[in-house]
Image 1 (tube, rainbow, N blue to C red):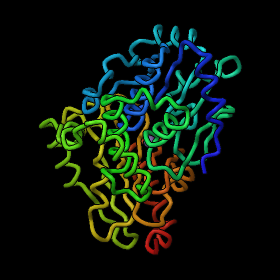
Image 2 (image 1 turned 60 degrees about the vertical axis):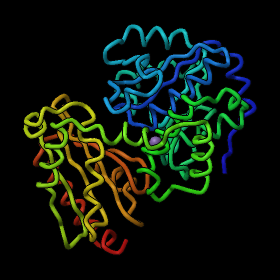
Image 3 (image 1 turned 45 degrees about the horizontal axis):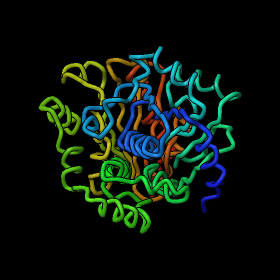
Length: 342
Ligand SMILES: [Mn+2]
C-alpha cells in the first residue's frame, strides 16, 4: 500500500543538518501535531529544524509542546525566508498542492523546488506536487498516522517520547473526529494504543482541544445552529455565516472550527456545508462533510476550486456572499440524486 522508499528518505534526512517543516494554511490539529512530533524527533536525533505555518496557530492547539516556537509566515516573513534559504531539506506536511500553504509562501516554496530536497507526508487525494519523495496515502485517516509509520520505518521511532505521542495523538484524534470518521481503521487504533503506552492522558488532550470554547464561540455556535438550513429534498444542510455575523460574535481565527460537523447531526442529512466569510479574508470559504458515498472531494474540486477527502473537504468562492450561497444551492440541486441515494 505504502509505496515509498523509506531507506532513501532516511539517507536524505541523515545528510541534511537543517530541515524546514511546512504546514498548510489555517492549520488544524493534524498538521500542527504532525509537524511538532516530527520536529521533536528530528531534534532529538541531532538535526536542527524549524516549523513554518502560513498563518496563526489557533488557540485550541497552542498548548501542544513546542507550538510557541512555530514561525508564523504572515507575521515573520523575513525569518521564514531565512529558514527556507538555509534549509537543506524541506518537508511538507498534511497538504499536497503548494497553494495550500497560501499564495506567497506557496510561490516561495515553488521557487525552491529546483534546488532543494523536498519531501511530502500527506493523506489528501490527488497529490499535485511534483517531487520524488511523496509519502502520500489517501486511505489513511490522518497525516499524524503516516508520521508514526514514517518514524517506524526509518527507525526514528527510537526518539519517541511522551510529548511526541501527545502531538501525534492530537493529530489522529482531530482528523478522525475522535475516531468516528470512515477512514478510522484498526491501524489507527493500534497506533493510538502505542501512543497511549507512552503515558499520555487522552482524556486531558480531548478536553484541551474540544472543551476550549470562549463565550463568543459558544454564542457563535448557537447562532450557527439557529441558521442551519435543511434542503430536505436533497438531504442537505448548510450554515451560512457572513462577515457581519462573524464580526458581531467577535470572530477569532479557529472560531468556526468544527461547526460544519453539526450539519450532519441531523438524522436525514447526507451532505452539509459551512459557508463563511472571514473578516480577514476576501474570499468565501466552504467546508463540506458527507455521510456515506457522496464524494465531497469531487464536489469541492468541480464547483469550488478545492478538494480534500471523500467525506471531508473544503473550497472557496470569489465573489459576493449571497452569490456564493446561491452557487452552492445550485450545485446541490445538480447533485441531488447522488446525495439522496448515497
Ligand atoms: Mn490531515
